[in-house]
Image (cartoon, rainbow, N blue to C red; front, side, top):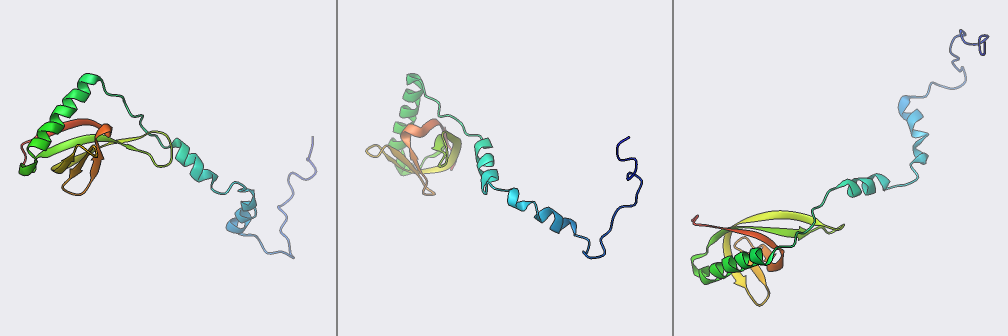
Length: 135
């Protein structure tokens, strides 16, 4: 058979060179990480995003009615939970988030809603509004 003459010989240990540590041994292969940043790109590609859903005309009407109600009652600083789409800065799609709190301003000219905490929500990104009597 092949290698029968050497298969049972003891492992060679050099007398000239010190035994290489596992860390040093692994480091000699690091130049093969030729694509620096590739792992980050793969992770970014694997990160999931949502598509912005198109609302029906009736859903848009309901949201517009709620926006008008908020605007009419703005002096009482109404409380609402607004679910809206936030586009992703790095790739197509984004995420739906919900901002909950008092409404500071409904700006029909700029088509935006400003929350008391300073968040500005673009009306066309709104997917749902839940009005609340919370004080």
